[in-house]
Length: 387
Image 1: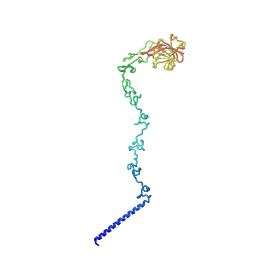
Image 2: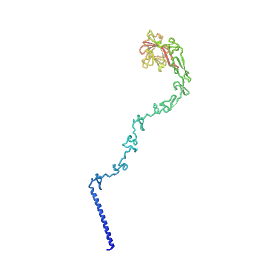
Image 3: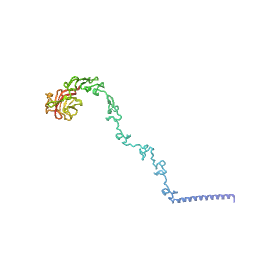
Image 4: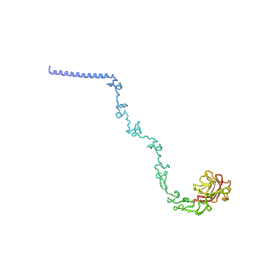
């Protein structure tokens, strides 16, 4: 055998051995696969073998995790699978979730608007929630409130003395006549200036023994004078120094002015200032005094000089004028002919009075004093009362 043939035989043997090895490996692999296949029949052995699925053998095989199956599995979260997993609620992420509120997470959730919490929120006003929101200041509503003042809302807050409201502003007041100015002021060249007096009444010094008068009344140079009464005059309210009751009735005491007479009359004298209650002053005969109570008063005098015997309730005394008799001769009062008032009274007039109690009285007008405007300032009369 030649060397060439020997090489061919050896090469052939090597190929046969290689083929035998490959065949043996394939058989071993097929045997292993065959055993794995046979293992499927053992579902429940705790092993998820080849061929087993979670549907066929849920005891051994867990369900396959799939993002998008609308189930958030243990291995999934919002970041890895937002389609299946909700975003976790975290306070401080600037989102107010359903489970959060202002109390549990004020960083994410705004405070709810509640009427009655003493805070006026942006969506609230005085009309929708008066408990929380103040009424807004409204110029022209008649109330000076809030930041309003006489300069920015003169209609509600008014202006200071000497100023008036024009076009919602306080401007210096200009006058056209004396009537545009306050008391004790006169209008001079459009300005209200202060003066000492306009009327005699402006000079009242509460001294009954002085004659109080306004000199140059109604003029910027006006001034008050106070002349002392030195001469006696009955029923002028003043008892001059050095005089007694026999010389001046005003120097008499109450016991001097009221006397009992044999005919049953009680008499006296009185000085009444009708303006003491701005209109009139009542006289109560039974009480022998003046009064401002119409329920007690029998007569009153108006500023125009009328002697009235009627009250606001219509129950005052009635009056009847008497002619032809002196005061001392008026002894027997008439039983009829009484009316409601006597007008245009003058000094020397005499009147019968039927009082509230149904008794009779009489008066004799001794003096009437009027001011510069012919308003009655004071009336003096003798009076008599018969029970």
